[in-house]
Image (tube, rainbow, N blue to C red; front, top):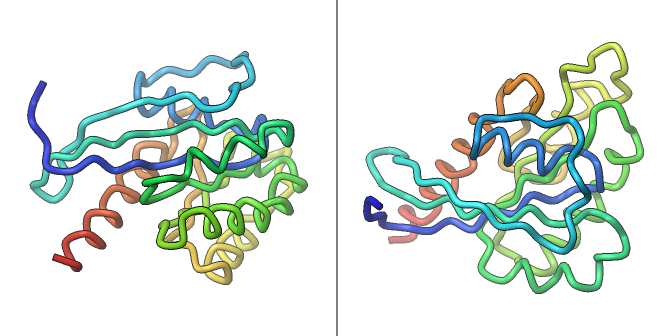
Length: 176
């Protein structure tokens, strides 16, 4: 295993069934499976990357989105540097619940960097949240960026995680 300089703990947040597990599975294993079981609590993953000539470990924590796990989620925020706050572009309710996710992230980890991710853009004909709404929400809520992805087709998945890693690295290096 190659050595690395930093470990970046990045959470995947959002309502249940928005595709968090599918996104991380596509990024880590380059695979998609349509029938994932619900995440119970948290599922950790890691991937090593070289970002701007710096070797890092992206430690990804897939956090359960169902309300019944809300009381245990706060323990997973400790030490997190970033989060992909994810919604399903075909489910408006998952978009409307973003305020709750962002508030929770900022309460539990005040310096966390947040990227807004609209997932399932392969289902354009079922779209219920426009790209423009996503961009505006990301800007208005102080996210570092916005991206639409398709875990099924792999569209922008790698980009979402790498950009998050780049932003975290830039933040760390600007403090040094």
